[in-house]
Image (cartoon, rainbow, N blue to C red; front, top):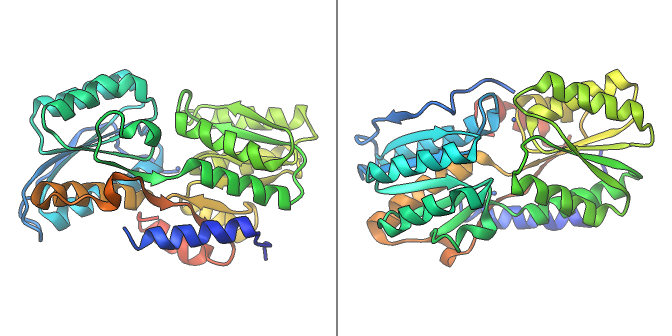
Length: 330
C-alpha cells in the first residue's frame, strides 16, 4: 500500500470540503457541434446554453466533461450545444458563433486565454453570462466571467511533487501533451517547486499517441538517471506506462487526470497514483450554475473559483473509481 504524506492529507481535506459545494483513451466526437433538445427535462428552465472547450478528438477527458454537461442540461431542462477545437483561433470562432446565436449562457475552457480574450469579452458585453472551466482560472475574472470551475493546478502540482519526493524520486520528466496550454505548464511548474530534484518538461502530442510513446521511450533510454515520470492526462499515462516497460526503465509513473485504463493501472501497481480533477463535475456544475444564475442570480462562492479537485486515486479506492470511470462519470 502506498504511503500517504501530510501533503496528500491536506489535499484530501480540501477536496472533500469543496465537494460539498458541487474540482484522457477512447475516441469521442468533441469537435462536432451537437445539440440536445432537453427543454422538456425535469427542471423545465428551457435556457439555451453553449459549451465551447479546447478538447481534442480522442481525449476521453472531454467526453467526461460533455457527459456532465448533457446530464445537467437534461436535469435542468435546458437546450445544450457542445463544440470544441484544440486550435485557439478556431475555438474563438466557435465562441463568436455562440454569441451571434444569442445563447442564454456560455461555458468556456481557456487553455490559451489571450487568444480567447476578445471573444469572451464580446459575450459578456452582449449580456451573456460566462463561466470558465478547467483552464484559465487566473484570467477568468479579468475577462468578466461569473466564476471559474476546476482544479487549482498549483495545489495539485505541489502535492504531486511532495509525494514523488517521498517516493525517493531523484530526477523526473513532466510530459506536456498540448503545446501552449497554460494549465499544463502550471502543473509541471508546481511539481518542480516541491520535488526538490531536477525535472525536465517533455513535449508530446496527444493527437499522436504512438509518437508520444516513442518520444517518452527515447528519453528514458537516453537518460537512464530519470526515475520519475509525470503525465498530465489519462491517454498519455497509458502510453508512458508502455514506454517505461519498453525502455527497460525502473521509473515510477504518476499522472494527473483519470480514465478507466488509468484506474486499472493504479490497481495493478503500474501507476503510483492519479490526481483526478473530476471533469464530470466541471461540466455539470457549469450548466447548473448558469441556469441558477439566469433564473435566480445565484453564484456559488461569491465569484471565487469553485474547486472540483484535486481528488486522489490510489490502490485504496481505484477499484471503485474504475467502475465509475467505465460508466463515463470519472
